[in-house]
Length: 102
Image (cartoon, rainbow, N blue to C red; front, side, top):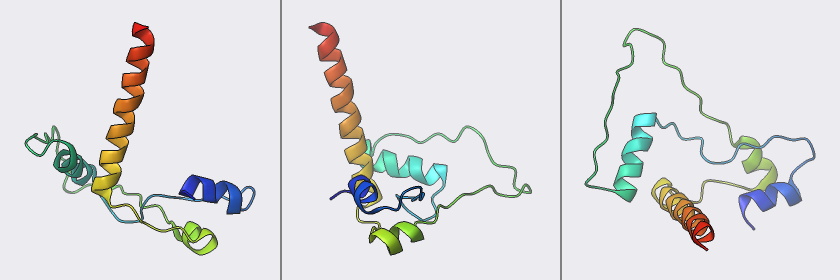
């Protein structure tokens, strides 16, 4: 059973569950991971720089409730999740294009 199905079947009514990862990752890190997974020869452009004296804004969701109450955890490495997401998006776009052409 997938995480979504587990939450629907096993989750408490009205409870919020964070799923995904509780590992810190910057936008730049995510961009580099996407490039490595999808287009290793591609380039990541950083168009602006953070103010080095400003406090850093960050949010790392806690997935503790999903772990303890539902037995969920991080099972899919980021590079595989990126590839699967891209494959799904390509399939959806391809289906929409075929539907329009018909």
